[in-house]
Amino acid sequence: MAESLEEDYTYSGDDDDDDDDADPNDYYGDECMEEDQEPVDEREPDPEYFEYKCLTVSEAKTFLQRQVEELCSKLKVDKRSALVLLMSHGWLIAELENRTEQDISNLLIEKGVLARHVPQAKRSVCGTSCSVCLQRKPRDEMKALLCSHFFCKDCWCKQFEVLINNGIASDLQCMAIDCHIGAPEDFVLSFLHVETIRKKYDKFIFRDYIKSHYNLRFCPGTDCTMVAQADKPQSKRVDCSKCKTSFCFNCCGAYHAPTDCETVKKWLMKCADDSETANYISANTKDCPKCHACIEKNGGCNHMQCSRCKHDFCWVCMGDWKFHGTEYYECSRYKEKPDIVNECAQVKAREALKKYLFYHGRWENHARSLELEAVTLGNINKRIQEKVMKNEGTWIDWQYLLDAAALLAKCRYSLQYTYPYAYYLESGPRKKLFEYQQAQLEAEIENLSWKIERAEKYQRGDLQNQMNVAEKRRQTLFKDFFPT
Amino acid sequence: MSGPEGTCFEGGVFPAKIIFPTDYPLTPPKMKFTCEMFHPNIYSDGRVCISILHAPGDDPMGYESSAERWSPVQSVEKILLSVVSMLAEPNAESGANVDASKMWRDERELFNRRAKEIVKKSLGLDKTDTS
Image (cartoon, rainbow over all chains, first blue to last red):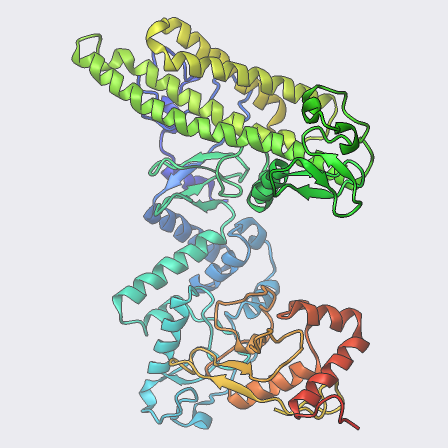
């Protein structure tokens, strides 16, 4: 599709690419947003590399306009038809350009651009009374789409206003029953006189265009209006050039490599659904050692009686209460785990829960570390200020600390998203390899975090080296487990 | 509204309210049965859930792009007709009352009996003094 056009919008992102964030000469690392692009080494393509552009609203509009024009000239149809066809085919011109004329006109009828039969003028039948408000109106106030269902101006206007306020824009249709003739933009706009509603219409219709577009995505950042464009939509990272939000192009959620969109969605849903319940169950309940009923302890006494099987046991050691006798604290002695490893459903459920909580705990922990390290970054900034004030080097000399913090954040973020991946990975050699690499990455990240927090004690070279190692680990893991 | 003949709701007389919004007819009215009802497409509080009464852009079940939608030229008569045909032929796929949908689908006999009870109640007949 419109390759020739897209060059116009390419900004020269690749020019200030560095092949390594830890490049000691890179003092301007945090100014550009290409942290994640790279290696110049073409034999080993970076699995995270993704070609995309960030367009402003007007750039995106121009781009869409050109696509419409291109289809107009290819199919010899008017703009309105081209627009509707594009919207119903994800704006893939290639899918439309080879259709036969008959095919296209059928599509246009189906989409309510053309009327199936040439309608007879119903105006005389309706007289000059509008069938919505049932009032008699002068002839020139009665308007209709090409289906000749006439309604008065006021009713059209009110109808459009109500629908637009409900978020409907590109799907506005004729008001008649079972009439699916769509209302083109200029028709709608001719009834909208209030500036705010015109703006709303404009905004929604643009939203509908982008939402239907195969190659375009809205930046999910709060109040951000940028549009990301990629020739080959993939689940790769996009950094908004305006609000700096990074998101996955495919699902528009937070960037989640090396986990894929489906898995991360499942994971997040699971976390939202039952992490709290699961935590509670795990913390406050135990299974009866005899019948495995789930028991919640709601009093202080450790002598428990299962309400189901009436088994008496000790909450602390889970052993039979009979043997406790008078020496209650005997149960503080370590004993072999009693033989309760039955294949009972509840044991399994608890195992599954344990597994989930293991991964969820780590996931949460890294999320928290990320927050704390954001605070560290603030402190680094302060420290740099102080040092510069005391004439201990210039701002530029201390820039490497900021680079290190940025790299730490990036690595930890990736590490966080390795946990859902591991959770859903089936056991086997591949999982072993994954967990090995994950552990390696984790170790290096903790080293890096340690060194950044105590940056004064470490040589710059040392820190730089640690950065390289951590990033290398991250890339190794991605190369093996994140599909290019 | 009287229950359609030849269905399990036959003979019943069901009182209902139709509430018109201030911007009627641009947005659809709401309909609510004021008596007890047991039907897949009627919420337990009596609200009726059919496509013709859905406000534009509001598609809670996400299924009805092709179904009959509200239009400002629809009439109250049309709404009532739709509700009668809904009573006759519930749409179990988009259940407003999940229990009723399940029973309609899996235990039709039980559903019919339950409907008969509703009919009797609507006529003010207690279980004991029915013929």
